[in-house]
Length: 368
Image (cartoon, rainbow, N blue to C red):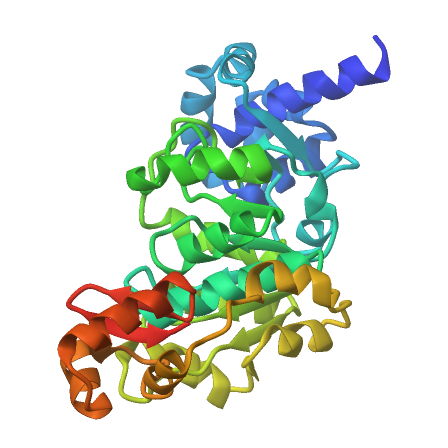
């Protein structure tokens, strides 16, 4: 049997081990190190399994679940669903991910994983973020991809979604790490986004197909987000946000942690401000990230694709000077400007079309 066929058979059995519900990366590693290969470990007897200190108490459960799994059928299911996988022994396994403790033995993916071998930065934050958080995440993702840096996130609502969309809008590469099988879109409303990421980047997960998005899966997902990245940027986070878990994993993995400051009165800024107090690097612009990671800055012509804006009239300049980077209600703008409501509405529409401001529900406006 040629080496490629042997390698494929070992991957088949490694995938089967990954389908056993209670076995994580560490226990799978113990089994393979003890028996020498996934295939040898899979065919080990009950008595041989009981000899392993870290496995002995789980032997009965392991044997029971193993008996219910046909490794070759599980492999066929991957092929039928057009799902590929990488293992730690593959040359194309992301090198940064290989460096973290308990690297996933199998990573399932749809799309193109090749650019994960290049520089990447994670952008994470709250699901229920503010408009400010969405805008910052979107802009940072655009500017990072303009510099040739891939954007990693978790495809959750809020900051994650804004980061992925920013990368895609700029024609950049982005990777989404899921806390479920990659044959499941979570959250469901991001189905269209997931398909765009697959077409222009990669969606990946350490969980086998069919795995539901359980709460216990997301901390494991977060360690992969940080593990694929040179640094993790937290844009907005509440005091108990899952984004803080990602930041702490980044620290454990000896990666940089960045935080974007926000409104001191906003609960969505408390997590970021805590990180800043603990020594995270403050981010005001993409240069703060690129300089710290010793990455090249994008050329001016690359940035101009999404930063160039039309000239303003005197009326537009005057009204824009009254609009802060935090939402302000249209009634307040009318009072501050001293203009009639119809003129303010018309000027706001013009500023919005020129991409200088954005409107959020309730007739609130803020600068972009």
